[in-house]
Amino acid sequence: MEIKKNDYFDIDIIDIGINGEGIGKINNFTVFVDGALPNEKVNIKIIKVKKNYGYGKLINIINPSPFRQKPICEHFGKCGGCNLLHLSYDEQLNVKSSFIQSNLKKIAKIENIIVPKAIGMDKPFHYRNKASFPISFTDKINIGFYKPRSHNIINIDNCAIQHPINNIVIEKTREFIKDSNISIYDENTGKGDLRHIVTRIGNKTNELLICVVINNDKFLYKDLLIEKFKDIPNLYSIVINYNTNNNNVILGSKTETILGKGYITDYIKDLKFNISPLSFYQVNPVQTEVLYKTALDFCNLTGNEIVFDAYCGIGTISLFLAKNCKKVYGIEIVPDAIKNAISNAKLNNIDNAEFFVGKSEEVIPKLIFEENICPDVVVVDPPRKGCDTALLDAIGKTSIKKLVYVSCDNATLARDINYLSNFGFNLKKIQPVDMFCMTTHIECVALITR
Ligand SMILES: C[S@@+](CC[C@H](N)C(=O)[O-])C[C@H]1O[C@@H](n2cnc3c(N)ncnc32)[C@H](O)[C@@H]1O
Image (cartoon, rainbow, N blue to C red; front, top):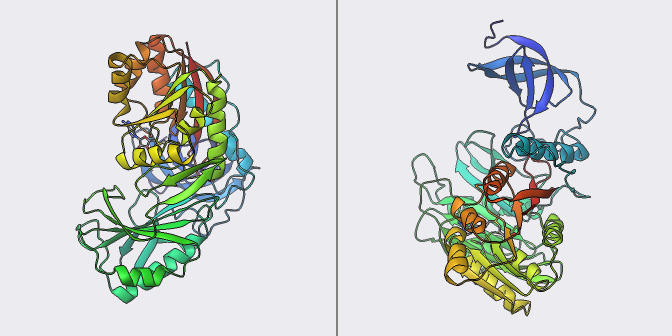
């Protein structure tokens, strides 16, 4: 059967894709349908046809899924933020585990490990402690999030997963733009000054840091900005980040503090952390405690071990490990994060943690082969692209028996497990933790041993 643009079909949705889209078949032709859910019968209109697959627009739901729910956000479907708001939270946890199961099978060829249901939140809304709002000017000022698969901004005045304080920050930013008449960055031309507003809020301390990202090497409106923002509840610090690169990276390397200390403080369990704007910090503070507890349980430390914490950020996992082992070596590429990690160790009176700035794949081989430090356990928590093979090769060439892998991208996790199998490592167990409720992203902790 020939499938053409603008044709209508009734199809069964049999699966869900990594962007939350429903997946159905017309004979052997695969169709992706935004907004449709598995086990639904839907009427669709074909909007794009490729050789073996196409895209359909959801016209009507003939038989809804029992797990379908009314999205609580008016921007659902138009904003690229949450793509699972139409699925019950409990079922989201099952779907996310199934993504991991499928990648373990496809990429790592593992079929004998059952991925348990993701550990979810009791209250899965307004959980994020960090927001980055791009700003543009069309016929009006736009502050919000990008539309899916586009760089057009949807204006947001209330978000289901962000901290409510952001609504006030956005409102005050609009007032600042109007009163200052500052030019707005245009990513097509690379011209205009104001690019992004980034906020961070301490979960336990409520300290709010606002970072204003400027496409210039100077910022002329410091006093007006402070005047506009000063009454925002819990405002603790304002920093200006200078980013003149014409690319998608939000923050440049230079920041200037114009109010307060230039960082916030927060607690994870009983440990205290200073967090500067350029440093990575987990975005879901409630689930971070669950994630770290899972990682620590998987390490099963007795108190005598040497542990490497690769990709350590501001030393959060390192300091939890340090309380349970003999010595921790933390390795991280961002110098500001390592400055935080060193001061965080002091802040918590921890003296058995040592930190190094550099690439894990360069520092760890040096520690092992030049300094002769061979750890009992290695913890890795890389960005989405996973671990560099130079790091996995170094681990593979030692007698290390235990690796605890914290992953925010299970496709690269599966790739790395597959690579490590060349050195006799096997996946022993895995536990997903839902850090990104209402979205298809999922974090997990894997215990890999030999
Ligand atoms: C997912 S974060 C984890 C941070 C920390 N473990 C935590 O839980 O907050 C990954 C970290 O790896 C750092 N990073 C990226 N590439 C790196 C590399 N090649 N070597 C060391 N650190 C790297 C990033 O700057 C970031 O802080």
